Length: 392
Image 1 (cartoon, rainbow, N blue to C red):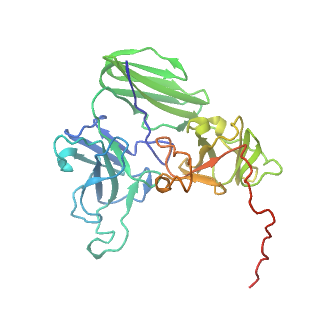
Image 2: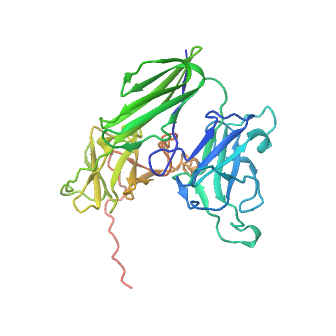
Image 3: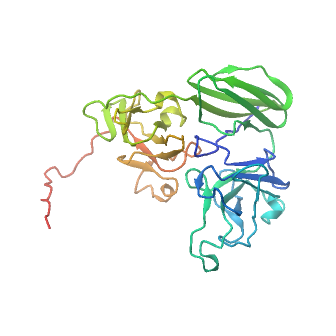
């Protein structure tokens, strides 16, 4: 049996993931019209209330994980460039444009188009075009990166059409409505926290309703058709305030190695409502067990990570939330080793052998690395004397 794994990993500012950009149909192809809908209230940008909107876009021809644009349409900041969007009827700060990717981007027949890369901007002139040096107002994903829409290459896929987000918060007792869509007629089964729900047969859409009472919900959906399976996942948490607890004595900001299997993270984030730790140790997912504790003064968040394997490098990040549950991803400012997806590929192995791979597909942005049970550095000079501090 062929297994196709399709994870719903969309990014947003008000939750770990959100449909900042949605499409109709749910599985767009290169040779058919696709309606692209952009929500200017999500992600990074300053396009709320804008009067005219442009989609600045190109295609990715190198593969399903590529990020390098080609066949870019229009000049940045040019008010006459293609990509003019129109307001979505009855909606505020939502814009739409309908294109047929192959003809819009002038890609020859027979050439596979894997993704559309896009950034949204004000109409202009701006960004240096027409003598206007003012930067263009623009909209990107929550990590200030390009936004991508994957194009369907055939076969069986399934996706959640509701909720439009994953990694979000709900109140105790709140009803969550889920719906999924398959790319072809299939048998569709939801699984909630490991418990399979009744299969909905011979359909392209399926629905499920959950009343939130548990701390965390991991929901998967599986479509089966013609010997193929496809899955998608979402998860959400019951909203809860962080535990208020004083910082244990002797700890300092940054990574504190307690023993060979325990590290305590201490992170200064004043006036932030909650901070979660994500990383290799929890599959990069929000979980109540990794919500950091908050000191009584409301300034410092801390968490002990137990059960770590000595000598193993663990990549990690903080998800820092404000009172409105907007969040940013960041790493610890005192970390000794970071992973950078944009620069690590250019580090020669002779400069840094065995550099830990970046967790591609799990997160974005800079991540930190921690490691318990490190071997002491073999100093070659043991009688070094620090020079006296010069006073000017």
